[in-house]
Structures are given as structure tokens and as C-alpha cells.
Amino acid sequence: MRWRDVGRHLSIRLGVAVQVHAVSRPVAVADLSPGERAQLPSAARRQQEWLLGRAALKKLMDGGDTSGVRFPDRCLSLTHAAGRAVAASCRGGQAGLGVDYEGWHTVDPRTARFFLQEHERDGADLLRLWTVKEALYKATPDNGQVAFLDYGVLRPEALYGAAVDRAGRDFRYASAPVGSGWLTVAVCHGPG
Ligand SMILES: CC(C)(COP(=O)(O)OP(=O)(O)OC[C@H]1O[C@@H](n2cnc3c(N)ncnc32)[C@H](O)[C@@H]1OP(=O)(O)O)[C@@H](O)C(=O)NCCC(=O)NCCS
Image (tube, rainbow, N blue to C red; front, side, top):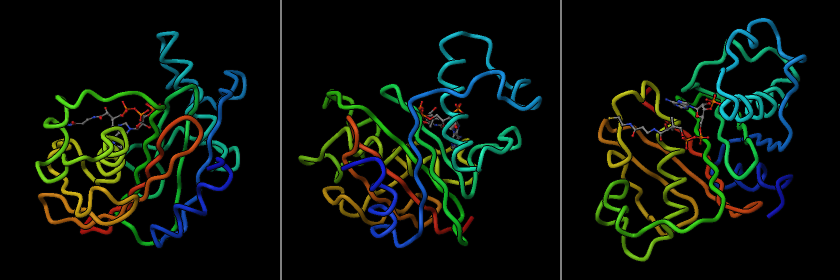
């Protein structure tokens, strides 16, 4: 799937209008707002990743100041992998939005028990389910004490569907193969 089509595709599957922007060029330090400059990480590698993320966020925010954004956010989410940053946003009454992107790589099946419940481990695509769990986590309000095993995906083999967490919150997620990996967007329908 092409990057330009993925937002529409995922919106249909989520039943919520989602915008997705992927970028591969970081924003220039000179183009940051004073507030953003104050947040610029000092380590060189992290700085590049952060600048890439700000470029993706700015695209969604019409070039605006991102320094007030705090994650998790009800209608914005961000991920970086494989030389890209991907930002997602949606409007509506959702309690949270999460996005995760992973470039193709093998996931050691022995690690599955650390992020998948038992019913989720049968023949599932581990890399895709990893992005599902990450996106669910990012979509969860107040996610400080939440672990990936707290989420149960109802039909793990499906590219889109429903999930619940131990607190009884309802989620929908949708995944798509795009670029050189899997992209998943999740929406938390609350309670918030
Ligand atoms: C926060 C976390 C989701 C980041 O994921 P990652 O795969 O390392 O990196 P990604 O590139 O996909 O996402 C990074 C972005 O997530 C966002 N983010 C950070 N913390 C977040 C949070 N708590 N909720 C939602 N989004 C968050 C940020 O935008 C960050 O980018 P930035 O630092 O450039 O702004 C990761 O640290 C994680 O998986 N935590 C696990 C939490 C867990 O197991 N908790 C158990 C507690 S008991």
C-alpha cells in the first residue's frame, strides 16, 4: 500500500476519520519555535529522531508549534522507525489515539509471551501484533502503569478489529502493510 492511501484505508476499517502523515526528512533546527527549541534532546541520534517526529507532527498541525503536545494525547500520536516518522490524528469523541510503525524484521517467537496473551500466539504475525499492542498502549489515556499483556485482541489474526484492556476500556485497531513494514492505528473509545 502507498503512504498516501493508508489514512483513507485505515479510516474505513476503524470507522473513524484518521489522517496519517509519514515523513523522511527532519525539520531544520532553524524552523523550530522557541518552545520546541527548548525541548530539543541533546544526544545527536535522539535529536535526529525527535526532529523527524516534529516534522511529521508539524505536517498534521499545518506547520504550527508542537511544544504544547504531550503524549498520550486524545487526538494525536507519533511513531518513528525505518528512517521515517509517522504522525496520526483524528477528530471526534475518542478517548485516545495511538499509532505504531515497524520496518520488516523478524520477531523471536520466544518473546511472544512477554507481549501477547496465550490466545494471541497461535500462528499470528508477531511483528504486526507488536505494532497492534504498541498502538493500543499509545491510545490509552494515563498509560503509565499499563503493560502490553493487559490488552486482549479479540481476533488476533484479523487486520482490523476490537480489543479490550483489563480496565474494561474498548478499542478498535487497524493494520496495513505500507512502505517497508506494518503500520497500526488504534482508537480508544473509553471510558477515558
Ligand atoms: C513509549 C513507547 C510506546 C515508545 O515506543 P517506541 O516503539 O519505543 O517508539 P515509537 O517511535 O514507536 O514512539 C515514540 C513516540 O511515542 C510517543 N510517546 C512517548 N510516550 C508515550 C506514551 N506514554 N503514550 C503515548 N505515546 C507516547 C512520543 O511521541 C514518542 O516520540 P517522541 O519522543 O519523538 O515525541 C515505548 O517506550 C513503550 O513501548 N513502552 C512500553 C510501556 C510499558 O511496557 N509499560 C509497562 C509499565 S508497567
